Length: 198
Image 1 (cartoon, one colour):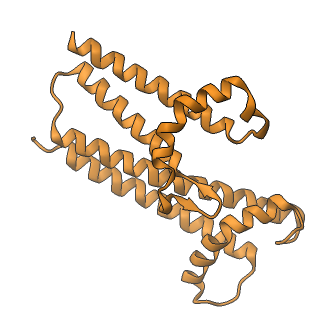
Image 2 (cartoon, helix red, strand yellow):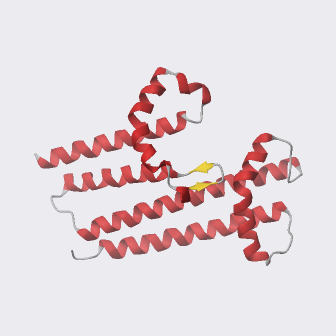
Image 3 (cartoon, helix red, strand yellow):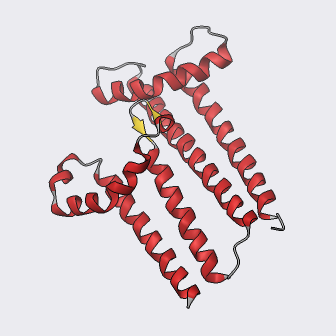
């Protein structure tokens, strides 16, 4: 009986996570805000998502990565319920391993999104032939990514002036390597914790 309850809770948590993803995507569509379905999703998802909205370190420029934490936490809870549904014992090592995997997933997702945005901006530089343009979208992207590109490129150039294109390339390569290191470290740590006898 208890396993059935945990299986149902795992399914409900997964469905709620999907509903939250739909809600997040709808926030990107300005005209969808006033649709009755969007208002319903807002009333169901926003109280939960708003719990994570104030996390300052999850804001980079104009981007808010706090929904990633909310979704990863739902995924972790769903996994715990699934584990309980399939076995009656949940060890401390398993819980710690799951928490480390969730943290690693969040960090890796944020880095991957930054890499994607940097690649998009680099393609825009190659297509236009110029690092700067009057396009408002380009300006917004530069406002978000500029501090990241500057910080990373200064680390490797010793403060020397370089082109924006070169800075983008350095930032992309650095973040790709960093993402690989993060994934390896968190994976090793999660594996060690999962092996704990308690």
